[in-house]
Length: 297
Image (cartoon, rainbow, N blue to C red; front, top):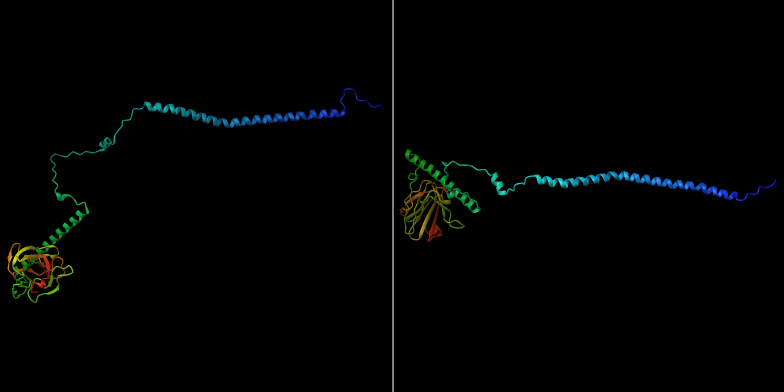
């Protein structure tokens, strides 16, 4: 059997197979690029869809800002201008006033009407108040004691200064006399350690004598810590002071001249005192000296 020779111009089997393979692959490559383009277009559309709301919000905000920039100044221009008020005007508008009747009179203020403000003034005011209270208390005690003595004298009973006890008259010497009757006292202390006199302890209502003649320069129911006090200037550069006497028993007044041995008061426990005694001070030319060195005590 004769073999069929290939016709001229007809592709041989190898060439045909190759061409067929080429034509088969190209459509696949073309479809892949198309798919890629479609995917790219879909991605771009999705991106635009997501971004569009953000762009819309930004545009709306810009429009609102523009409207506010135009509307607010226009509104302010239509409002009346605010009146400027000073702090003084405001205070005056809030202030209250009161009208007083012309018939009302005010009492004049005295210097004592002002209260103390500085520490020194406060201390002075306290001291004055304390002194006034002490003086008032002493005066009240003196009044009560004087009433009691007067009542005893009017009833004819009890003890009076003159009837309490009989004492021998004091012996007057050139140097002076003892201010208390002999045998009625003892000295508890004298000048020293800040104490300016001699303390002669004796029963209440014991008579007190002027140690020398002289003029009374002090006679008070309350004189500081001395209580009921009498002081005498003897005219020779010496003075004596007698303290803590009983209220209402002073027998002399300021300016009165007394002789040595004159009863000037009675022993008590007034002022800064804790027991009945006579506190006697003796001064020579103003200087405190020990009475025991100058008087027959």
